[in-house]
Amino acid sequence: MRHYEIALIVHPDQSKSGQVTAMMDKYKEMITADGGSIHREEDWGRKHLAYPINKIYKAHYLMMNIECGQETLDKLNYNFRFNDAVLRNLIISKKEAITEPSIMMTAKDEDKKPVRR
Image: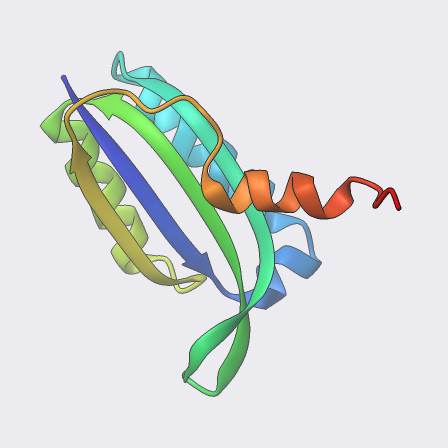
């Protein structure tokens, strides 16, 4: 099995109604059902887009690092393509599993720390 990093940009209406977690649970179940594993899962929340997509200016960002076979990856890609809530997706092949938090999550944690003067 190979390692992959998946980034998803989801329609902002999905994050308001809480459907993002249901969508992620469905994708996680697809991965683990075929013997794959999830090394890292991050929800970056709603952010402004660099440019509008279909007159949408904000979107919900998600990222996962997984290990799965080609058949599972094809199923995921098929589901991303025909899910109207997924505005954009990116799947990158990695050489090894990445488990430490990304720069986006560490920056979020640093923003929450109180400033001492």
